[in-house]
Length: 157
Image (tube, rainbow, N blue to C red; front, side):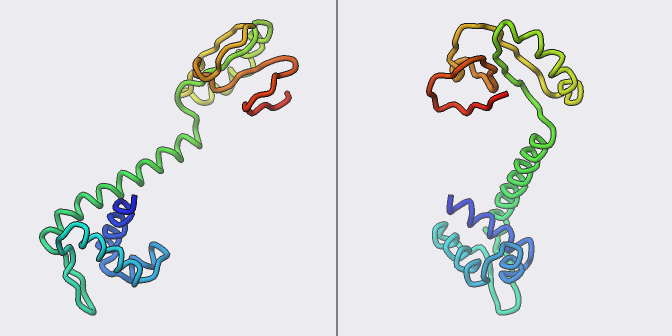
């Protein structure tokens, strides 16, 4: 994981054109940024940046390496955006378990939610028998009566 962090720091240094610019963007000190880049160079056994007091320049190896590090940052940003999108609008399959007597109330209750979020699908398992929620991959279970001691999170409705 340290390598991934160092790659991200390196890509940020190149993006900002300086250790101090990257440090400001990352909330780190310039010396910490420099140390991380130096460690990346030591671990890889190659010089990635030509440094002077006023300027940074990529070496040939640094240019090739930066392409991959920048791609890593883009992939991370895309992954974060996907999480944000999922948090804002539910997508995928919701697996719900309910007793037989309660099933007729679920469709009217969840109809508006499903209409509002067309990327959300519902799989309803209707059964009065106790089931293994993990094995059945159930996201939400509705139960009546007292629950046995368990590590499940339960809320009274």
